[in-house]
Length: 479
Image (tube, rainbow, N blue to C red; front, side):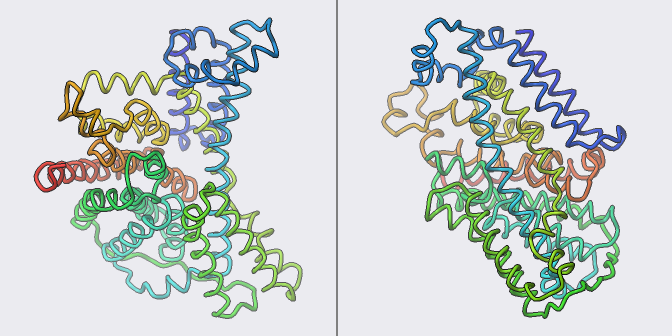
């Protein structure tokens, strides 16, 4: 048990180092990378102590797998510790790296596309149409655009697009932090009500826990309320106008038509990603890389006759130098650390504890949502999916608690509410969601500043959203 506790302590220390990036003057990507490696090192050196406790669901599965049988036949003299090391180095790390790589390449592709549109002044086509400088009005416009865009794209991509827009609209850094934080709340709320808006809803959709029409019908109202409540509170005390930055013309022979073309291709390429996934069943990152490749060829053709210096600046080769690689490395580190906790069984222990001590879907889902602001919501959702199988009406009928167990059938209240809480609970802390991590990286938002200024607003919207879901589920749909 000592090794399990040590892994948890190291994770908390690393988490604090990430949160204290400002005072420590150490980039959070560095802290995350060190954390991501050290936690696996502790795990590997304490393997027997961890895995013999029986908390790791992946180790239990591996023991029944054909891979272990093949390993035993190939190395008949291998000890149990050798089998455990094989489980970690040749299976767990590779599996988790595969999942991480999908997220990282998706993020890299999305950031490059958005940076290309920005370099070609494509966002001016939109920002020129947003003429208001009143803070409250601008906040509502941007938040609602983010909410609905996040339902079509995903919350991470939407945040990248909207922060690129913010830079064209707001000059002052602290004001931009505030707007970016509201965009995080809006992106997470918008991502929760569609099957393609958030990684967690994609997981629940692919896993058969929810269907597309059901999640859109049942979670839309709680999601929009979880955004509107913080906006209404902000509207009471935010006054004044924003100052727009001075626009610097790029050295290029680009016409307005070319700007529009790159904007349409960029946004169209991002929207194409969920369509690509639906048609091919291939992972979303492949659709993103395809969109990037098409945009790359387009920029090469547009700028082929221009001087080499300008060509380098506007084609993808030049744009890649502008992309924020520390964000990618930060993601790699923090998600690696969470993967170690998932593999060792920490998340399984937590999930079992919640069920035993709460035994109420609103309390369990609500807690999972709050925890997803600290630990990534993807493994939390995976733990919940592993803890509760999707039940059928027949199994519910013969269970000892049919009323409670009915919540776990396909489109049951537990799964719908999980989609909402896991999606929106991450807004409570800046580090709690993909959207928050991207905003934090792109704008260098301070963790403590967000906690003081924004966390309570996000929590208020989150709790109101749960209340709205409870009211519609218990009194309108009786579901």
